[in-house]
Image (cartoon, rainbow, N blue to C red; front, side, top):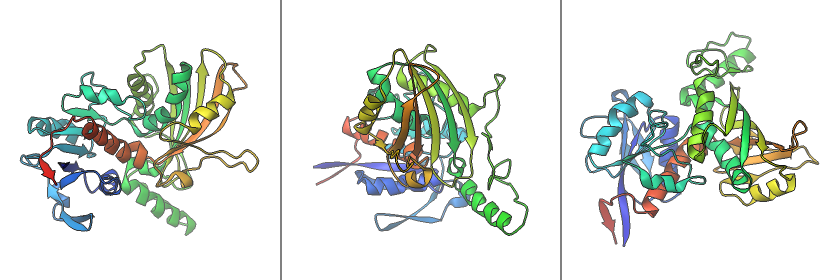
Length: 346
């Protein structure tokens, strides 16, 4: 007998929401019933799942009745308002927003790193920020062998991180510039085609933007580390359609052999080692787009520190940086019997 589950996707029409639908089908998640939820303006639209046409429903007070699992990607304010109601109705929620990530009662989970944290949920599990997920998958295997003391990260974040409308805006602006016209930013604060700018999340008194502080604080929580794990980040929006890249500098408590690092990463879950020094071939966002693995390469000794390593990565923000990580958490919940099944198929 196969247990199946009633699933609701909150934010079903967004870039991550539509990817969640694809992944549930691709990975053959045991779905008994799939409910697609969005704002009232999207109600009545349709999306396909396993050959069936599903009608999108407006989010409302009865949306979570008889639902086992909610996969949410509708923004922090929506999550704060509605996910506690989903939990009250008996569902477990995996939230892709920043609403609950730093709540000490909410697990922040990357399945390749801290799967056991999922056991301690009280109804809500948080999906980390996309840049945090990609970095964690790549550096955790090394941290397990030899503790990391300091991380310096620079991110190169694609338009997909700001959603489907930002991706379309990049296309429109590129066409405009190539036709001799001025690009008109509407979704992003500045023109993104043939341009880049420091990340557009709000700045704090420290001078760091929220995106950068997410990488600092979330990584520590996922790793079970305190402030002795020193992390700093600079986050940049770049004119790439999909998939983020990151330049990572790692400082260990002792020298870490480059060959050993390559060997470890080549066999680590969720990682694809990709480097050819003869042809200057390393991870690129174009190649990472649509892939589940985090592509890692250009691993080298840090010339400025004897205990340092440098590496480069590219990963699909919509998949592993968001939707895939959420579905993997859902698979953990099912595999460890942390959901209650509503239906049973023979």
